[in-house]
Length: 205
Image (tube, rainbow, N blue to C red):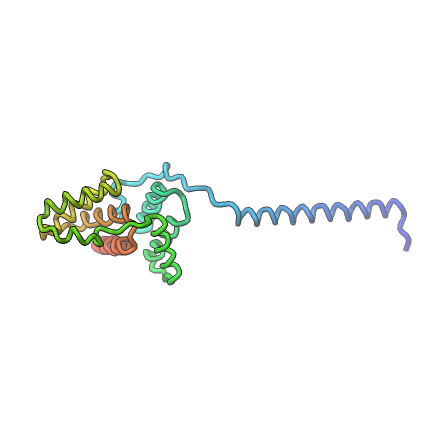
């Protein structure tokens, strides 16, 4: 069967339009897919998030973890390391299993955020000082030299001084101590202990 010139012309135009729209769709899909991989999500705007002074007393553990994430973002920026730590804590709160790889990722994130920092428990010279006042004075000076005169130091030194004198501290003070300790040193053991005490607090309330 022979096609007329007019019919052939319209047929060629129709095929051309099909090719044009098909190519355009593939291009858009490719650009969208590559964009999802290449582009980082918009940083979370923590300035708009209200973080209570006693955020660690928040009874909802997941909300408390959101505050924790916001604090880390304020301190370090919206970087993968802070999400690694917060996501790991969220899984623990929800009772979800964690892998060795995730645990190691948290350790690596902590080292990146707080490089070359030893917790006070690893400072052996101070343990030889018996007088609580002298111990607190020297300990405070060492911390200020390392971090500057920040509020967390007073919280840590106050608790350490009471322990040196053979006294104890209430749980809320211990939570403040662990929070301040983690804020300065980012120690994984401190984070685990903080989570344990917070869970204990939730059960009692």
